[in-house]
Length: 328
Length: 137
Ligand code: SF4
Ligand code: SF4
Ligand code: SF4
Picture (cartoon, rainbow over the protein chains, first blue to last red):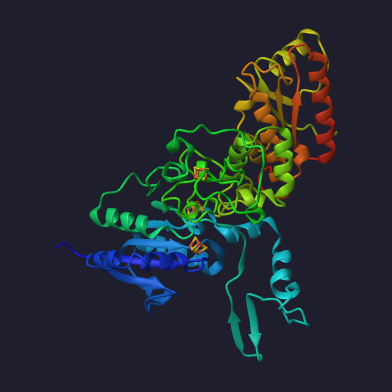
């Protein structure tokens, strides 16, 4: 048998849900491990330190996954080092590919975010208003440093070159298994591609009107998910529950729709979309019946930017431009 | 000298673009701030184009289409209107001034109005100043 593939996994600014998704492959992961040798998995699973990563030769790791976005100088540094040490780098999950939920913080200034987190929140007890500082001399002799908060969230490919992308928050384990198998077998598309089925969520959704020989009709009423309980079988968008299925990659097999929840776009945009939020706005508006319904829609959802860019604000055109990426 | 804004205009070929032509024939005076892009229908202007224009340094974007009932493709302009309502709110909620973006119905017979709209929009943009996205913050 050929040598095992040297595998690395870095959790950057994510929540570790993506790592759980990999573990959720269960026996498929065990099979894959026959072909993989884990040489780095930090800071979560394996007892390897960043300095061990730094000590590796360039290109030592055959295949590395990063989950999470870049939010601080530690993420920035480790992602760059990992890129250098890896032959193939995969941005794994919504945060790594698009910025994820945390990227919505970019709508606010750092000051607003810090005040909210360290002062104003109901459960916070901080009478002196102490804020985290990247540098501090403790008891006059211990020089302590913390990673500094970056100006904005960036996706992995805004910082370094990425070979492949896998969407999802977290990625669905069946598709992760397919991606891992494809990688192990060396059966890969062109660099820079998403490792996906290429289908939209609607394509794999059992509620799709086309599956039931029905036409899509203009939507005249708009509901939020808290407004009621949608019919379990019919298309949610048709019922007025706004669903991003038409413009989202369906590698999750329409997971949310299977439990009566509309798609919010974690799978990432279908091919050809430049700005996910703008395309969502366009798709929803085109589904609505008339101007009045559009007016009702925008007044019903109190933050259209957070709604349309829930997982993808970092990758959006406006955010990139506001504080340009630091790719080098 | 007051700042001369850079406006990207998407004009439907049947109405607003014809209106701009007429403005020329009538020798209407308006500032040379707008760069028109002729499109088949205002309904073909994806919100992504508008964001891209703003991100690449346009100070304002004008989308021009036919009046209701006049659309060559029946209801392309209705679609435009609904899209622009949602897009405007989205831009605003993301912290950008939606006044940099304008939707107007201008027919092929309204050369004067085309000139007026450009003049008015130019003045408004002069008051707003240059687009903060220009060249990044
Ligand atoms: S994509 Fe979702 S599951 Fe993965 S790190 Fe981000 S928030 Fe967590
Ligand atoms: S819009 Fe949503 S509910 Fe309707 S078919 Fe597409 S994914 Fe399914
Ligand atoms: S349905 Fe949409 S939001 Fe839900 S898991 Fe799939 S891609 Fe993500």
